[in-house]
Image (cartoon, rainbow, N blue to C red; front, side, top):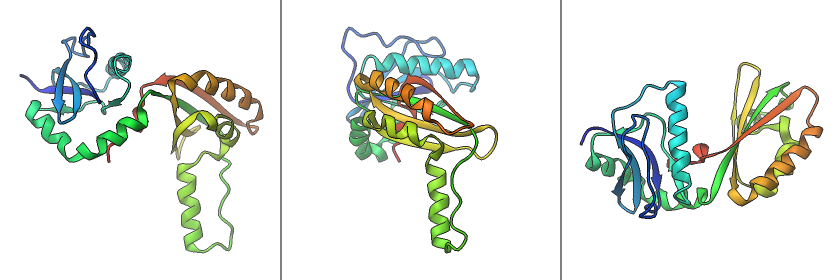
Length: 218
């Protein structure tokens, strides 16, 4: 078998009558068992990260998400030499897989793009180094500009992650992990909160996506 291109880890195999479909290289996808998990692979080499290839990989993972309740998408370009190498690759994180599956089970990702004026308050002028360090750490992991949106959608969010951007008009990317059945409620709460955003701040929402931002196994 040629090099395996890796798409996602599943907690259980899809139903027998389910079709995995084809991957980016248009070859049939296959299932490799690795311990108690199952990895969806394509016999193909690593792909170049073009916009078309990234969209194609997302399309594959979306299809897999309809076949299994717990899917951990793998980073674009992930490969293994063969099934044995794949099992060796996953062996060190075997203990992290069950809680990772439970985190994303039945859930999708909604992504918020925050742009506009930065409103994170600076630390007090007389704050000590410890206080300044904590304030800087919070600023990297919070999105105070959309606090009204975060509060309004909180009842529907299983977990949230924030990625701050130091340059450009985009202030932050915020990722919400939401149960599939709560997406409609989340959308209604998000729409109501938009009217209360601070002046100069805009936020757009996309998704639902596979839970890309919540699949880390570290």
